[in-house]
Length: 102
Image (cartoon, rainbow, N blue to C red; front, side):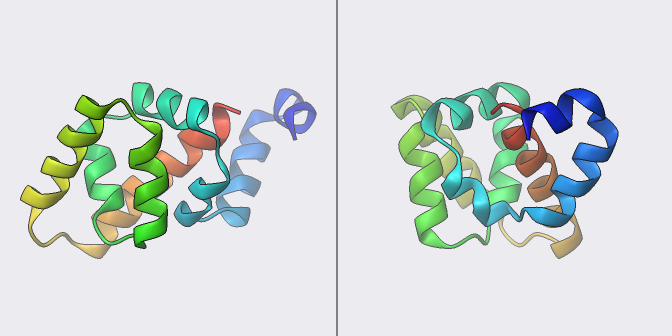
């Protein structure tokens, strides 16, 4: 996949959007999750994680430093209701950022 991405980044990202869903972040190692958090804000990630399965949330939070994980959990808790489209947009940003870090 790295060769494909190197040859045509735009096409790679288009294909990746069709191939991967946010829940696939369980396939991403801890280093890539931490790199992802350098590319998105805590608020963006909180929005993306608002309604995800517990195993995915545990995987993401477990990869982070304790203070970052705590901030993220707080942000998720204080979000309240979110629009599905807003959450999907943040899911896509996070997913795309994660698969670019590999």
